[in-house]
Length: 471
Image (cartoon, rainbow, N blue to C red; front, side):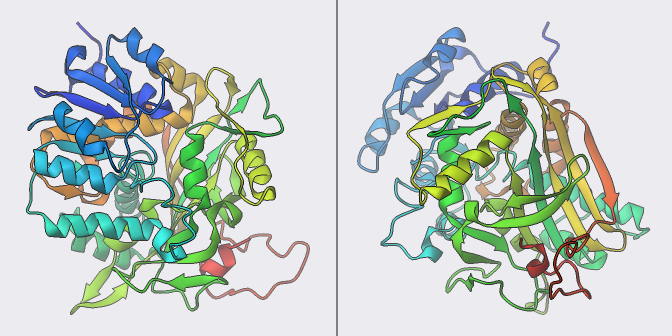
């Protein structure tokens, strides 16, 4: 008998679209924890990468890229009511696949909202229309136009995804530690009120990847611990963040959108060219990239508190990412060539010899200043826990697994974001694969030692103003 729990038995077929580092890492977890036979799983990829791994598990592998013109013709014969489409691709429209799945009665999950090729960088689109904010608005418009139907979980990897569940647990932890007398919220309005009453002004998705390889980055090569194409795509988009009600003025190059829910702003510069200050327990304070991510927008929107339909509270939320050192060098070279991608790409896996991925949420502005809660997964433990994974990929893969299981257990929930899901169920599934899950308070603010070399004009009354976080 397997030592691993089977969380759900799935009678339908599973179609995986895309089979890069995350697809290869999540397949053994699916076979471990979901009751499904390999003959009911098909992988559809845009190239032959991963075909060997699929063959090792006895899973059918098809190399056929999806395009705007052919995706319905290719996918419809492969799907029927009750099946599951797991979308781990790049350059394939998530909204197009969600619409097809809804019309076909098929369950769906992705890790981010992808456009068709060029959607991130098309010069004919305004910067506002190249944002994750705009992509989310497209997805939510599809939800508004469809009656409730088969479950479609959007943006459920590690971040976006897992971090939304970590935020809820962190809010409860801060409430308990500050003596706030609260019952566990049961809906969106109650979670927003809890964050408001606690005084949480800012949430950083604070991540520091310290994994190192025995084969260093070479000139003309982009190296990363997860999808190079995924990182380059989001790093080339405008920097974005959920925009808090406590913020006094827009940052330099900051702009508001002229459409949608108005929970976020963007900057007229790429995220991979924008640096911010943040903090994690092991790394301490460091500079990171303000990379756009769906959770920056959805968490800020979800925690918006209203009184008589008037917005009285919303936190500032953004991703603060320091990738592995080889990836930082890759970004530096990428930016120096005016955002022209290097000729060679390499995802680190077997070459990694040490390091951790410290991924969590930093909630700041409350009575105890700031609280970080998250995963400190090492490469050594990741390799013991699951094949074909690094510390970075496993945090994503187990979050994909938990989202798939939740969707199978709740097959008629319609389109949902991570913030709307059962955070306890997802954390229960993920926790065994996250290494140490820790919470730590800190007195750090973005102003600590900031003026060591030069005097600056800073907002000392509120150190959590966004302009104090920018490097």
